[in-house]
Structures are given as structure tokens and as C-alpha cells.
Amino acid sequence: MSPVPRLLVPRTLRGRLALVAVTAAALLLTTLTVAFDAVAERHLLSQADDRLRGTLAAVASTIEMSGRQVRVRETSHDEILDSNVWVYDGSRTVEQPASARRRHTLARVARRIADGTGPACVTTAGPDGQEGWRLCAQDVSPRGTGVVAVAAVDMTPYASSMDALLTGCVAFGVVMLACTYVLTRLSVGRALRPVTDMTERAARWSAVSSTTRLASPTAPEELRHLGVSLDALLDRIRSVLRHEQQLTAELSHELRTPLARIVAELDLWRTRPRSPSETLRAHAVIEAAAASMRTICDTLLDQSRATADTAPDTPGTCRVDRVLNRLADAEVHAGVHTFVEVDAALRAGVAETVVERIVSPLHANALRHARSAVTLSARATPRGVDIVVSDDGAGVPPDFAPRLFRPGQRADPVDGHDGAGLGLALVRRLTRSAGGRVWHDDSYTDGARFVVQLPG
Image (cartoon, rainbow, N blue to C red; front, top):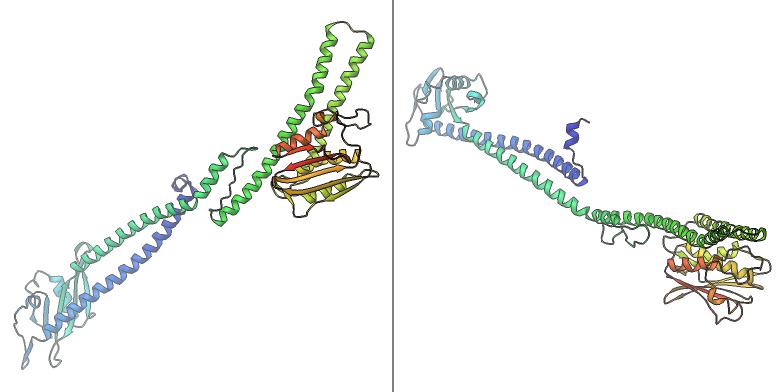
């Protein structure tokens, strides 16, 4: 495409649709104008012929025959007969207009059609291509003796009427095209207003914290479906970004303590000369802190990979029974059976992966400390959904309960478990970020019971 036509093409969809509408309307109006012009021209020509036939009928009523002589009887109000009528009796001119001598071309045409050498009606061209005269011939003798009358009418007034009609049609077409362009732009702009609103809402969209939805119930059906699809896409993006932020925050928070321990031990080791035993003890502390950091990274990255392997059922919601049954099947401990008690229709207002990351550490702890049974149950409450994880083990020691959800805390550091004490701390942070809370039910005396409250 050449540069000039490209500049003429509107950049906006509204402008392009308006241009298409105007082009279609212009083609239609041009066709209608040409057809109307042809019909109007035929109608005006028919009117001129009717006038000429009326004149010829009036001339016929004035013809008198006396033997072989033909005479035109004079009547009152015969100005038209005197100015635009020729009467021929064979080769003899009986009557002609006073201006016939000045209009030689018109007189020759009248003679030719009176002799029968041309059509009964003809139209002559005027000077410079202008409209000329319309002439018609008719036998007006009472007994068919060959007396022919030729009447002429000036076509200039008819041409002026035709020009006026054509000018009116063109003016009407221009007005219609302008109205079509304006109305099309307004209509398309109104139809695309939901798209503009969606664009503005998308510009204000925050990757993690925004609750803006692009779908509008008042938008047309097509745009509403588009908004729903975009909302689903943004929910997935928001979920991924939230997951990345949580992972970064958890790594930063959990690595801070062992890293500070390493830095403090190195600073203390540099302050004064150390004995070999003190140096070995410092090395052991640094090695333990580094191992703790490695364990923290492995734990968080393993949970991150497990989260990435499963897609949420519906953005922002999930079926609780599906999560609990999957956890019960995936995590098995020798001699311990997991029971699931949940209504299949129960849904939580949190993504499936988030619920799994919250419940999984609680379930793992319950399996590790239970004697024979772990129960995963869920129920709907006025505040949302409560997920309960209980076991029949020894329970939480009373002196350890206040430190239960602190990072790096373990009730029995020498129980053989290789964890870093991050499970319950991660559970609390994930639950809070999802808009819920988690607590230990100290009223339960047959073991340990943890309750997770999530939005419904």
C-alpha cells in the first residue's frame, strides 16, 4: 500500500467502521441518484411530449379546408400557435413562427420530420451542449390530405428543473453521508464503551493485590465473555506472581536467622585468637547454620515445585474434598490411617494449590505424631470454611504451645525428624495471606487438633 492511502485510513476501529458505512452509503446513494435521474428525465420528457400533443390537437381544431386550399383559422389566445408551430401542406408552408427566419436549424428539423424522413418526435441540441428544443409532428388534416403540423417546445425550463432535482439529490446525499458518518461513530463509540472501561480497569490493575474484574454484567454478551476470559487469565497471572512473592518472602525470612548466626560467629571468631577447640566449635555452628539454610531452601523449593505441578480447579476457588482426598492418598505413614470427612459440594474461596500447601504440613505432622489415626474434616461456617486436622497422638506439650507457630521451633529437636521447623510457620503465613487464620485447639485432649479457617 502506498503512503498516501495509508494516511487516509483511520487508525481507530470506530473511524474504520464509520468509513466503511460511509462508503457503502455512498455507493447506495449514487445508484439511487442515477436511477432517480433517469426516471425524472423520462418523466420530464413525457411531460414535454404531452404538452406538444396538446398543442398539435389545438392546431388541428383550427385547420379549415376550402377545396384543396388549407387555411389556419385565427383564434384568440393563440400566442403559442403563432410562435412554435409549423403547418405544411405537402411542400408548401401554410404557417410558421415569426422567428422561423432566425432559427434556420429548427426550421430545417421541422421540415424534415414533417416530410416523414425522421422520427415523429426529436430533440435538438442547443449551443455549447445545452438543452435545445423538442419537436413533434402530426397529421392534422380533417380528411387525411397530408396536412402536417409540427410543434416545438423549449427544453430549457425542463433542463433547469432537472438540474435543480440533481442538485437537491447531491445535497441530500452529502447530508446523509455526513449523518451516516457521525451516527456510525457515535453508535460504534457507544458499543465500544465497555472496551474502554475494560482498558481503564486493566491499566489500574495491580498484579497481586487488586480485585478489579474486567467482566461487566451490563456489557454486551461478546464483550462479557471476553472479560471473563481476561479475568481468568489475570487470575492465573496474579496467582503466579503471588506465589513468587510468597516464595521470595519465605526464603528471605527463613534464611535471615541462620545467616545472622553465621555472621555473628565469624565476627566473634575474628575478635581474638581462638583455641583449636573453640575454632572447631565455631566451625560446627557455621556448618549447622549452613545445613539449616540448605534444608530451608530445599523445603521451600520442593513445595514450590509441587505447587507448580497442579493447576487450580477454578481461579480463586476449589473443591475441598478433592484436596483432602489427594493429601490422604499421597502421604502415608506405617500403621496410621487417614480418614476424610467432607461434603463433596463444599468449596473454599482459595485456590486449590494454596489449600494444599496449608493443609499438607499439618497432615504431615499429624501422621508423624499419631498412634493409629488421622482425621481430615471440613465444614461450612458463617465465616467461610473450617478445615480440621486431628490425630490421636500425645498432643502438643503445654510449654511449647506459645511457640508452636514460630519459625525454626521444634517441640523435640532430637526426635529424628530432619525438618527445619518451618512447617507451621509457613501454614500461618499462607493462611493469613489467603484471608484466613489457623490455630491449635487446646480443648481437644485426645491428641492434637489444628483448625484452618478459610474464606468460603
